[in-house]
Amino acid sequence: MQIRMTSFVKKEFLHILRDKRTMLVVLVIPLMLIMLFGFTVTTDVNNVDVAVCAPVRSHVVNESVERIASSRYFRFVGYIDCNDIDRTLRTGEASAVVVFHRDYSTNGSYQLVMDGADVNTATTSQAYLNATLASASPTNSQRSAFNAQLFEMHMLYNPQMKSSFNFIPGIMGMIFLLICAMMTSISIVREKETGTMEVLLVSPVKPAYIIISKMIPYLVLSFIDLIIILLLAYFVLEVPMAGGIGGIVLVSVLYLVLSLALGMMVSNVVTSQIAALLISAMVMMMPVLFFSGLLFPVENLPWALRWISYVVPARWYIDAMRKMMIVGVGLRGVMLEVGILLVETMALLAASTKKFNDRLE
Image (tube, rainbow, N blue to C red; front, side, top):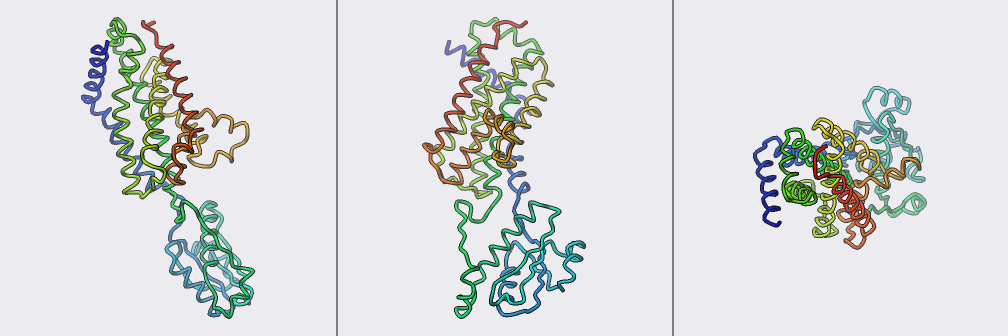
């Protein structure tokens, strides 16, 4: 049986290696996606145009303006009259205006007027501006007047607020689920369409071993993808692996097996490659995008939709990766996520094996 199993696995490897399109989808496209999303999909703000309205340009005001101008997040466009705030924002000369109080040197009061057309950029810019102005330390003689205004803020785990730290684990969850499920489902359905599945079914190999032989080559290629993606994330995108690379790889391999099992399940319920492609690439993408925490927190969803997220495997994998990569939690700290992924993997494997008939209908 072991020799027969090895022959099936070898046959699958040769079939994949000879198909250039499959190799392109499995190895090249995931790397392109991780680089594309890592550098382009970002909530960071850089070079935000900021104007300043200051009735009294005191030393403290000038110091605060210098801090804004020297920050890589902002671009100081100059002083404006307070009556020109609306015109400045409306014409796009600035995206934010800092209005310093006449007695800013003594009471530390200021107002931020933001262009709210882009809510995300405005919110992030407001937070950055507040942090920059709060760091403007007055002289010792003025410090007592600022005691009520000064505060200290610590941003743990991601002090530079890099959005790639948040997106990379989510992108990994999306890529592995789509690629593994899509390729395995298409692989089996293609053999059904061409008639070669009949040859497999009349062999003395049990259906369970046929499923395993189909999964092993894609698991190996997906593992290669995983290693390359982790290297790119760490050395190119500078995403930390604070929780330990061993635990990250272990949880990722479990997720890969789950994704392959999901692809097997899809292949059992469709009869054409087009249907398998649509279900794998489109139907699965929607839950990953909206119910996994990739784009926005799951906690923001209504209760009815939040229950759906509990059965989306990508949610638990993304949560585990963020904890292990960014926060620095070890494998013991993500046992809940690992347990849920393990249960879903066993359920999908059992369902795929049961659904896989030993004859074609």
